[in-house]
Amino acid sequence: MQFMIDSKNLPLFTKRYPRDSRTFSDLVNHEVSVALTEDIGTGDLTATLILPDSHAHATIISRENAVICGIDWVNACFHQLDKNVRIKWHVSEGDKIAVGQLLCDISGNARALLSAERCALNFLQTLSAVATHTQQYVAAIAGSKAQILDTRKTLPGLRLAQKYAVTVGGGYNQRLALYDGILIKENHIATAGSIHAALEHAQELNANVSIQIEVENIDELKQALHAGATSILLDNFSLSELREAVKINHNRALLEASGNVNLETVRSIAETGVDRISIGALTKNIRAIDLSMRIQ
Image 1: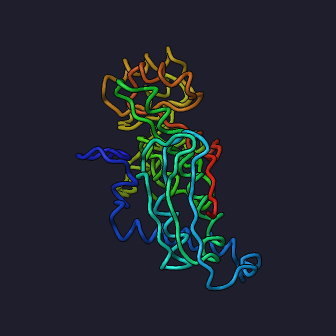
Image 2: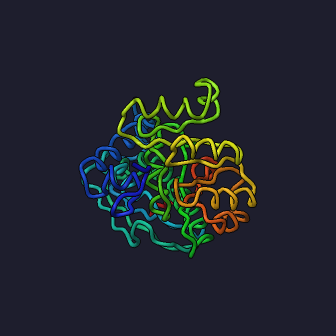
Image 3: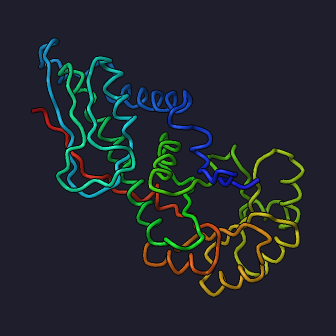
């Protein structure tokens, strides 16, 4: 079993949380509830300056080019405070948006709009940033067989939301979490005693999850293949080492390149023939997309 590839070639998140499913809706509502509780607490004191029955209309506008992501989170932020808030979106999830573009119109109780504003924008700006960054990497390797993957280097509390955003940008998911797959890294190998022993112990678990092992050089790659590894992470290999690894592997195992990946290097890495490229920066080193909400 491999991490994210099935007969439909869907990312892990998409398989586990289809966007039209109850599981997806529950996830969104839970994350929004936590965010609103964190922000509002015992009450939004500033919003009390507004009359309780005041009605308002607002818009959200983009201040830069981006890939839009997080519409469901935005909707939930407003609807959890007032189910009667009306939101009309002029874009769809995954659309490329331009500077100054109107994204949506929002109408409803003024207090609800003002109290939900920051949480709604936080989700939309952050998830759009992940989707945008991912799409740039996907575009950079277009035409190659490689896939762009995320990692577990995510913002605390936003793991699944960020992994969803990666899929909106055209990327794929590494394991969703520690429970979701076995990735044997250098410290696991050192503790187990050898690559062969670590793989053997992992297989004995019969956990019905994928097993991947990380190697740091060609010799370790050969050891992993000899031990029957079917998924191997090539950590910080040079381009020449990646090409050699692909040749030695000869399609026996799924090969994933990781380390020293950026928009300037990713194309060359993909052209070595590896199957996947995982990039922690997709979810770790992100800058929120500049969006603005204004009361009209």
